[in-house]
Image (cartoon, rainbow over all chains, first blue to last red; front, side):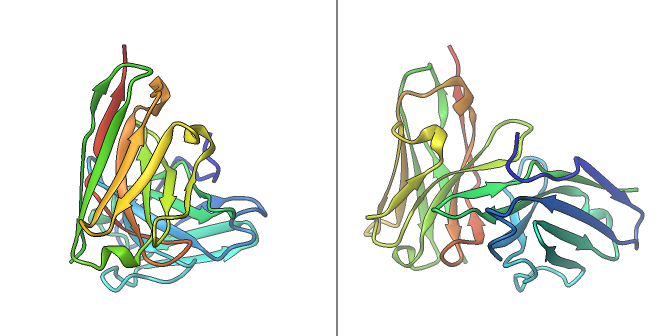
Length: 110
Length: 119
């Protein structure tokens, strides 16, 4: 069982917005703002899309946004495109040099 | 441009050892903490180990502590993971990962190398 809880699937039509949740505890997401999100295509390594809760790497489109409330972080993908179809994983620093991941959410573009 | 190339994976019997390597380029290797992250088939990633800048501080996830050893050679821009007393549940793709800053994020990943532990 993964340390962070994500819904196994999410979906939306092209152009719509989808939000993926990531629930942790007071020991990880609830304490630290070191929350990041990764996009992974089949057979490929994960790729960073959001870090420090809401910051985007320079090469990630602004259709990707992140937020946090209490022990739950969220990733929102706006203006869905077919190329956004992938697995998405959240990650948080959990203190004492330990990091935890979520089990992943498969995003389907209908 | 950051480039991380993982190698050393393969099929190994339970209880045996294997050493993974990661060749880094495109950045000042010695200035960054480095991690190993693994992903079992069909599962989410799992953080395995970190080695801080300088190489003196190393930390591991509980399930590999005492069996795995992370190390680095800054003169050659290389990261290593010595895996001893391997178990079937160590089967996964292992990724070498660069951290963007202390405590995260994981901003660059190798292509991964598959380790299969099976009798």
